[in-house]
Length: 342
View 1 (cartoon, one colour):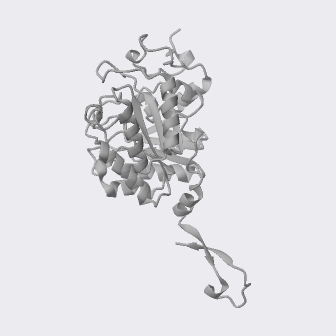
View 2: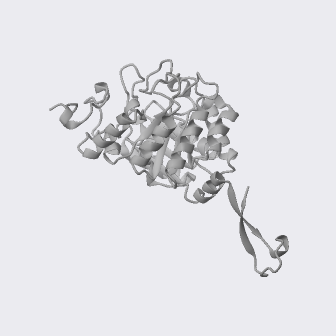
View 3: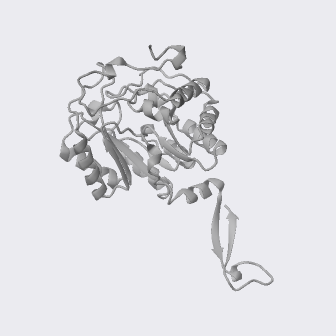
């Protein structure tokens, strides 16, 4: 019975060219067999939301949605760039929807998420690249879901510092911007993006909040990159304050996209994980089906800075004062801790 029939739930978007028999045995896609999958699908449709899970044809969407998790893609489903690897359609984008921040926040609440990932298409048609919209979504999600961990996966905003500052002012816990590939292949793989510009964005995001954010990036393998190029990219990311790395296999979304040059064996992914860990990354996810937000909540690099971020959002900080610094008629000689509004 076709899975798009009513008894199974809403129709699932899937490009059949993504699933061909030429892939090696370790590339396996799990089809939905969990009612939570269809509940998640229905909720996304009910709130008129877009997910990168579907738009980018992520091979893990069956598993993630079956667990009640999803990565929300804001600012529409039409991208102004035409990257050779990406399944998201390229077209003139629609106007931003003013109520989208509230809808994303409501979806996050309904799903009882403790960790949410928010991404977006590239919006080069907007002066700020969609930065203010990111800011609004982050703030709305935090307001409706106190205590939630917020991860953003952003475009490069054409390296406009003032736009990046708008995102960082909303204080996400995890800042993710993907390098995608090695320096040599960047002009072929990424539309308009630049290798060193992406690295600069990652470093600036970290510096804008004085290091009070976990910085994350990802690289696809199988596009023809060489081992020494991968290791150099790791070093470049570390030099630009990236502490969390994802490595995954590139899968061709359609015949219109770049072909797969190599299918990387799981043992090689395991080796790269070991090397990256030894180099100094705090956390590494490396495997054929690993994607930027796959099992994003498994590692929580923000725990050591979570309280500081939340204090900054609330506009308060704890300051230690001695009695002689406080105008009290009779003070205990012990130090007094007071919370001051900034």
